[in-house]
Image (cartoon, rainbow, N blue to C red):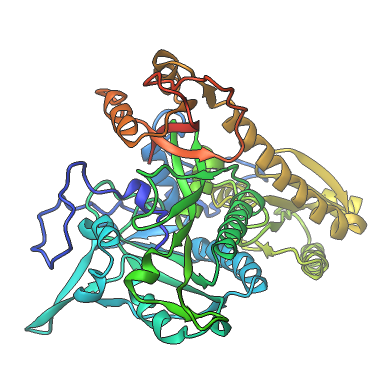
Length: 546
């Protein structure tokens, strides 16, 4: 189905496109599970402990985002308790902090697709070989990635069973049974599930894995107009997931013929960009399948004139890759930096009594923490309190910074005297004194400010990474600057392939079209393609990609 993983999970160039058979497993280079280092001393107090805000040993990251992005990212996702490595290469355990963020994305998106009339369902994980091979172009696009079940117990299966890389061929035989007349349309289904794509190169947590979580929508309509309207409605929701929830700017556009989903009429996409690596990354895709699959699977309806017509279909999907893009966009050398709307917990309340504070004063402080927590929760704020007495305040600060929690709220003896709290933003480090009476109103406002500021900062960084290029020299200079290139293009597949090969260097992969952006400058008549010199048909956004 939809192909967020495809852009970076493509088979090696020149791989033969053939219907998948149950192959012998090739030898692979085993991915070594990373060791999950524990903080030295676990930050516990010893001999009286550290002062509030004091140094905490063993927390933080060893690698720098700027200097060693790959190692920084690999260290970060483990240290911040997002994932653990599993003993099957390319598979990862999503820990509660990561899964809670996926649940926020699920809830936001699920609510909105249901308002469009989409219903959730579930289809099996397994596909027979005959059904998988029904649509030739589609299966060729996935052939190198299909995983097969060939044995059960000690017995060899008479016919191998494929594990779904996507669900078109699982679902559409049943669409053909369920749809009979125009009264059965539209049929709009979604499923929240996992898929398996057994690729062997460069697995990366969230970004590229053999098994990943996603939603995949599959819909059928009587007319092309209805189908195309939904394609853009869903694409706008994907923009909302990235920009409104994850604070990640994206570019909406259409995929080139070479890059579109196998078997689709056309593919639309939201594309993100990681400035530190100079690479684009496909965020989510919404495909108009046209009538291709309905003809293959005989999905027809009887119109008002009692004539058989093939339905128009769409498929669309979003994966847990979205979390990886968010992490890459916002995190820093201290750890995660989470946008408030997607953070599992938005505020941490930390009481910081002194060693000399009287027991009754400590209890009063804890009571005030409970009171402020309830006031914030009543306003819909997701709050965690850290009242652990065996960790120093400084260790707690660093711990929650590593986990990216958006706002820290401190309550110490002076704050008790002043009837106020001290807040500290994770994104900027800015501090602000907030009176107790204003906490329930000011902190929700502050969280929305943080959300808006994070998006604005990310958008500014991305905007500075796009160059308009009218020549090959300008194009290569943009790539050398780790930028995207917006070019006039003749929209020819052979040109795209030539550009990819010619832009490959000893140190970097070749560039490809990320999308044909919906928002682009005017294209005056007579404008030439930046590469071929032929008349340009559109603007294309190019870049190296994941």
